[in-house]
Amino acid sequence: MNAPVPGPRGPGRSAWLARARPWAGLLPFLAFAFLFMIVPASSIVVGSFQTEAGAFTLANFAHLFKPSILDSYLVTIKVSATTAALGGLLGFLIAYAVTLGGLPKPLRSFMSTFSGVASNFAGVPLAFAFISTLGRVGLVTVIFRTLFGLDIYDSGFNLYSFWGLSLTYTYFQIPLMILIIEPALDGMRKEWREASESLGASSFQYWVKVGIPVLLPAILASLILLFGNAFGAYATAYALTGGLINIVPILIGAQVRGNVLHDPNLGYALAFGMVIVMTISILAYSWLQRLGSRWVK
Amino acid sequence: MRRRAGLSWLWFSIGIVYFFLPLVATFLFSLRGKKGALSFAAYRNVFVDPQFLRTFGFSFEMALLTILAGLALIVPTAIWVQLKLPKAKPLFDVLTLLPFAIPPIILAFGLIRSYSRPPFALVSSPALLVAGYVIISFPYIYRAVDAGLRAMDLRGLSEAAQSLGAGWGGLLFRVVLPNLRTALLSATFLTLAIVVGELTLAVLLAWPAFGPYMAQKGRDYAYEPAALAIMSFALTWGSIGIIQALTRTGRDKGAGLNAGTH
Image 1 (cartoon, one colour):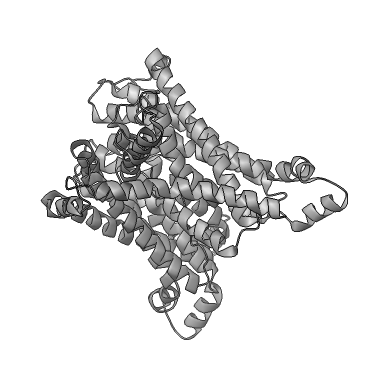
Image 2 (cartoon, rainbow over the protein chains, first blue to last red):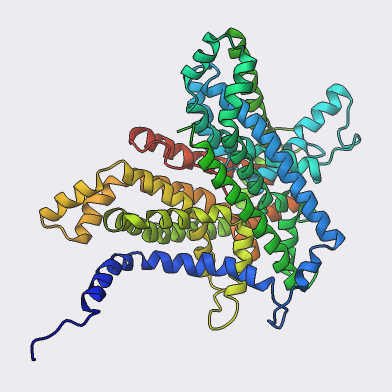
């Protein structure tokens, strides 16, 4: 009777402990990520459903449909889509040129290195670079005026509005596209092209029937990444326009700093809208990535 | 074939023009600090401004703290996951890459909202800024470290070290870290380049950092900002140049260079 009888849950419990113990090594990292990433991000979502007193409400979302707010979402989407398309197209063509296009090898490693630098050359310095280039007394503006007698500002261009911001963003979008599409282009097998040529396909037919379909998921995934990259950009726009352009990140910044409309819950709703856009982008991105990896390894 | 290479040259040249024209324009602009002559006057003006040294020093200090904290969090965890808990790898991957999906403006907003009230009134402490920077640099640090770990036989090394009597400390400091040197330096320089010029968190948390200082200069001056832009490009270029030189000698090719904080 005195023999210790292992309780029915005894072995199960120690097995559970043995399995749980390795997780303890992850605790510092998990705690940090939880406190400074998950908590802040969720607090935005929670805050957008709350009144200032903390009660539940859906009223904040009604703000999102005010014409001025709706307009800022439209401008942000337009800038993001334009720069994703422009940067995506140029980045793809450049990446194609240095991977499969028959250019000397050193140009490729130069372009990859430079893209690493240029995709990080953003924010305030990038804004200054474009002011020096396309501002009222910028190099290109002056060249156009003195050589061709054309004042680009008279013909409607303004660095501090839509096209100026888009050209500036494109500067970091192109190298980002190069960096993310290069692996996919590397995965294009020479044999596919040889096979289609030996079957009598023209270069055009090869691209329409083989090249584009194979690359499509990777291209779309990259474009989505570029879109999200531009959608959340704050520093470049802030430095370029001094916070005067009507895009969502700038509006959120103004709400946080409390110097325009004193309605923090509008800030949450604005930010929540951005969280939704980013979430959709990420989900679409990872779905397309999986789709693309069927062909391109 | 020749025709195709011709088109390739065209795309390549367009890229070169787009990348270098703004840099050339900025450099020329920065030389116009003195009326009527090209000079480095704008650079001199920047250097003699006490605000420049103060804000740069502040951001540099924040960058060092970020690097220390980031490495201390990521490196042991990455090693632990690889040796003891491979099934946690997907979770670890997602959490370290997630900051790419959270724009800094959202992170700043959330940090302010979460930590501006007691008992967690951290908003006026630089610790919160550093915490935010650590989150922003997670993807960069993790990818460099992960590439470094994959380039070595961690399991074999750890078994060898333990069979020779090394404990966890010995394994970490005398076996793994020396082998990770390249990866650690990559992570360090990349984080440095990103944090020193960072604007969003610094502006919203109201710190006298280098990013907000540059933005302020941009509003008040004409040529000094161009000089600052050239200098900060040189910093980024220098940091990434060092990484490239390091990774070319090591095996961990391309230890994760990607999108910055825009």
